[in-house]
Image (cartoon, rainbow, N blue to C red; front, side, top):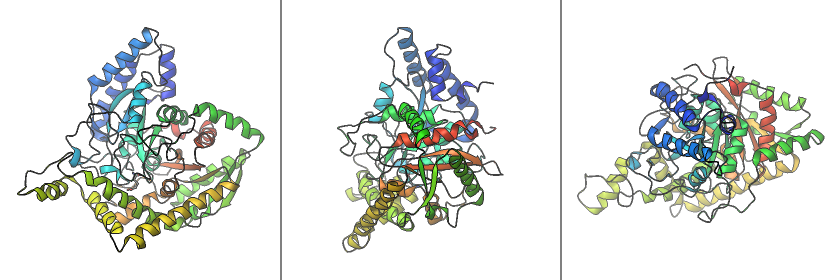
Length: 493
Ligand code: GLN
């Protein structure tokens, strides 16, 4: 039986549109109806504009009817994390600081989605300024995990993952600074990809930690990741860290990789540091099944070592907070966003506006970041962290001399209960233990569903690759997906 329209993938929707079996307006309506039906329980969105989305859908249908040139996502509804600027739409980063801010321009990723013909459907909830692993740091509301509404969807792109799992969107964009695409994808039973640093322009992505942030896709199948990644990738002169490398058709390239590797099997590394204590036994068992699958496919699976793994969380929380403290200095009550009315002099504008506008986690990070950059501590913390970062990257590059990809769990634990970790920031920081090093090393990584706990919570499998080898990861992910149906399961909502 065919899935209802709101649960179709972008790849399927594109095919249906191309065969004129449905219109973009019909698809968009289906997603809107579904959102109306479940959103009071899921709360994945920060803002929605049904009329705006339907107008874009009608424009796509008109292009198709007139046989005009169509983009690769023409007529497909895409929802985006509320951290990417889209002209005329709210851009809040789930912060009181930007609660009333409307973006005057398009992020490059958004401009490319629009050029590809996508229908923009809604703004997705997140941890404030992308800081967190549960979406509980949103200043507005918490998003529920569609598989268990008492649990968190992961974060910081929790809205992007929950909306997909709940059928409120066809594909979504998130951002990943230390795991924020992969971890919520894993916890919600969908797929998500963090591109190589520099693959996707950061222009118009509200900055958290500029040397780590990347925009990337989430979807209900692996092909959707390749499709969306192709649409948003490529050099951009407005982002000096975006790289001039060719943008392939990722799905075509992934298929070619798979064909090649029937002759020469891919080599997969299991970093031994990722399989130690603290890994949930059900997750371990699911990952071992996946390993057995790849072995049965003829892959050469072997243990490798990333010896500096134990320093990753500390290194990340020095570098990310240092960059955040600098990036968030722009919210001063004058240039952007919230301005306190409780002021008696000019200095109060800064202090009061920031005191009122930022939440506790954001303040904690600004304080920590300011501290590690302060004179006297800079050498001991920030500079030292940069050196360790180089060692972490080197570990990966050495591992990639022996293997083509690394396979790990995405998260050490399945979705936890709301409130369970919000009082303990350090416990929350451990949620990203398997994803954070990838960002420090600038590498691509993806997460796909690979099972469920006995209690019905999704489990994610992470694959990491060499710089700009997203296609190898997509190939491996696709071969797994073709033989399993985890990605086809839907929560009962
Ligand atoms: N959870 C990590 C943090 O809080 C990563 C967040 C992210 O990738 N944006 O910083």
